Amino acid sequence: MVKAVVVIGTLVGSSLLLAKLGKIHGKDLPAEYFSNGYPTILRLLDSEIFMGFVFFVTVAIVVYIVYLLWQLHEVAVHKAHEMSSAHTQIVFALSLCGLFINKAWWVLAIIIAFARWDVLADSISNIIRKGVNPESNDTKSTTKTVTEE
Image 1 (tube, one colour):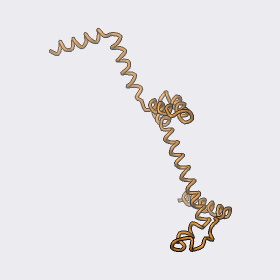
Image 2 (cartoon, helix red, strand yellow; image 1 turned 180 degrees about the vertical axis):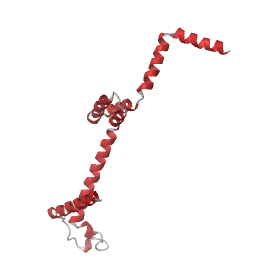
Image 3 (cartoon, helix red, strand yellow; image 1 turned 90 degrees about the horizontal axis):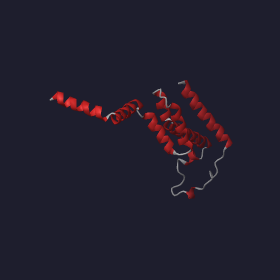
Image 4 (spheres, one colour; image 1 turned 180 degrees about the horizontal axis):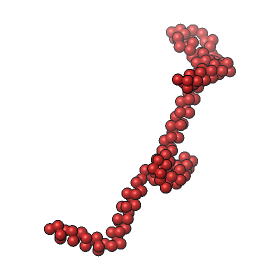
């Protein structure tokens, strides 16, 4: 509750400060300028305090969107750190390369961070084992079929 009051107080105070520093031009437009006379919202839009509020809300939204995009960009690093992966440093480096050089590096960091390296290593080991000793694997499979029948 205190945090919300401080944020709202800061926003209102900043809006008032910006209102003292700024001036809205064009407040003296004649009623004939508008098709149905003065619109009712014109008083609000001509207020320096309201425009200061709109400015700070716009800046806050832009900062929040940049923060969310940064979190999305760092998802690979957070996943690698969460899994206590040995690849955390390489994922971080590739993520930075993706930010400054080319987005393909970021995609590679995502692949490295989310890959199940233990399953991949077992599969590659089985492929290599079958390639080195093809006869032993064939004899095992034939002995299984003979004993099963």
